[in-house]
Length: 340
View 1 (tube, rainbow, N blue to C red):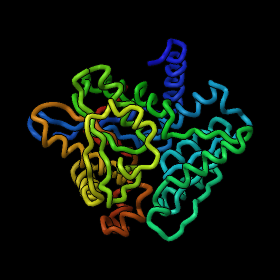
View 2: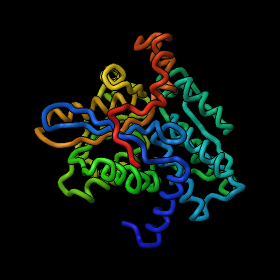
View 3: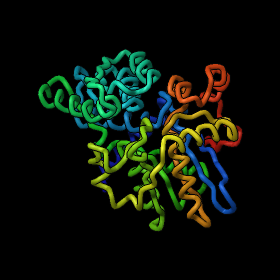
């Protein structure tokens, strides 16, 4: 896929990411039934607390190495949260100004985290419809237009079509799983967001085992799960459509199924995660029902830290319960597999 020079650049970026505390996250093993286990990457142990740290770092550094992103330029991105936090935070580390455009309906915790990075945060227009509040379509369009109209100032990473988003997981997440467990999982159930984690992990697993099966976990059309999209409703899916051959099928989950798994993980594994993590586990569990023997890889993109208001409004946890369990944002579960 890559020529030797490009491969050398990505390997260099990988080492730089590791030196910054991005990557090499713990893995939680969840036995499901006899001969079937789920392995979940706990991505909130990245430096800026989400799986998007990997993609953001790879996209920013590759743009710098290619000369597209200048030191005096401004990186602009439309996003629903974690990618924005990662881009803004890493850009600050690299001395780059960032402008993040978001839909108004994302969680207050995510908005606050974005503002804390020091980046310029812009909300798209809320016309009162659920679509305008939750969809990143307008934010993505505005970011691309800014870069198109002012290329001498703005550079848009466009995570939905940026191959570095995908290759971040081919060069880090996938190899880390194999190194830590000694396994190449036969299956994977990965949430459909931008498609970077999904296609990157599929690319790695299938390169190591041609029989590996990878499933995209998508939200039910009537559900809103921050970080998870529905394929048919998604407006931006360039990265996914260009690599559909890496996806064997889709698994659909609801908001309620996601919340149920969030509660399960806290109760049974002392892991307190965000909504997309619950969705990924719900999808992996549905896949496990069809598997007689094998290992299933999934990813827990972030912790529950940014979802306090959402969880309280949905009645999942009281304020006291949430505060009591906050320690699990930073504690590595005793059963987790770590890289040394």
